Image (cartoon, rainbow, N blue to C red; front, side, top):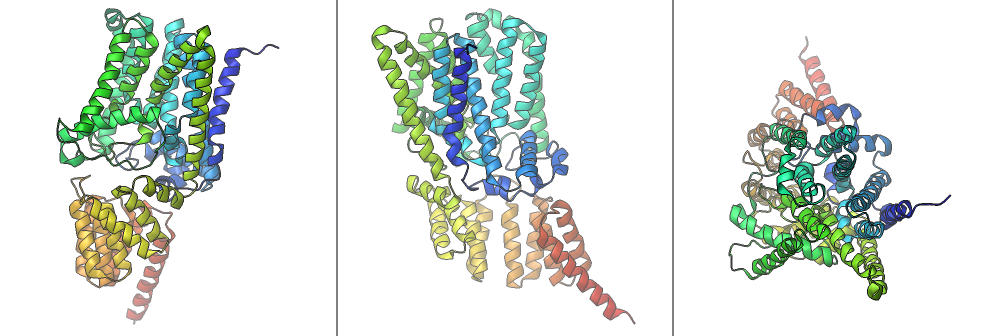
Length: 567
């Protein structure tokens, strides 16, 4: 039986994507895996799944389908990292295959599709999405989004209404897994403008009815997101407390993404971008020139080269969500470029394909694609090893970004958990020194000093943490909780109760605050109130054994007191 080259090329792309990340299988949980997976009680029971669709996920997000997959993965693998790595690897392989399939549909050129799929499969910039177990679950949204796009292309080719309906369903799933899909309608317009209607804006606009269901679904998602999360952006304030500075710095960030597409060799989980406040800033001017060059290329390819126009426009459209028009907690992250990189891979693959299509440059074209694939593969493989455990990742991050306040915070927190208080203090102090707005470092310093019974210093840094917090106008609930616990240790019970009430007022569903309030009431002799708070903590988080144990001790104490009081 003769095997089609198209099928063979697809298998090659899929296997390349898998092989790139096989060496991540032994890697341990690292970095934000602790918050989203390792210490996330919500994913430990499938009974929590319905609540994912009506409550905020975490960190200003609402991604209920992603949380559902977390819970399903936990049900099968518990805290075995292998299952979480398999999730990211398989998703990346299928997404790479979709990039191959979409390119094939657009160009009808199998070799161009192969080049595009291979570049996407092995690009080192993707490690921040695939190797990082937490980010790997965001790939569900991208997978469904690309499926929706691919199926829509098929719909335009065949006019089958079933394909149109399938595309709508895929979009719904994509939105529920990741808000990156909100730009999907713009991608449909791009495709129709370039391919379906052959550069005819009039015909594209005339087909507006076919976009209405996609637009309505997107708007409904945005409305639900705002209602559930309680705000539009993921933070309440812009970076540097300035919309202008944030936008100018975002221009610099966008140009930096372009640079990383070509030279992805200094990768890190923390990129510190200095605020740009002047229009005459040299980095801003250089960044503007780079982006203008891309716009010129788009203009030059208009009505002349569909692939180049489409690929660059794809990049700009898919990066819109990360241009910080709405407040976000991160201004630049490698994982943000994952979907946009398809445009880069397509454009570069097209250039290489043009070389291989000409007799004189055929050898050069194949040699270049082979060289790029090998170089990218080697870098991806090496970067995967940086993620083998949390300490390795954080040490490498600090080597790459020595002036990053977040890098120092992260490794300081790690050493604190490991019990190396000397190293923890060193890095946390450095993190606080590098940024007056780093509330996390100040909070960690406060709790560190509290454990060492250096209560005056602990109070100072916890108050600084609360004052530095800018992400939520209501206040820093964890900071108030930690300050309340400090007062509890210090023997200042009234201050502890007053401060813990603030934490609960800000975040009523924060189980630890209720538990700590129960301890404060117990020390103050208010045993009935203490029991009520501890039961509230258990109702919110029934998976924490410490809450159950302390409630049992409290009930025994109440029983003992009642016995003593009985005649």
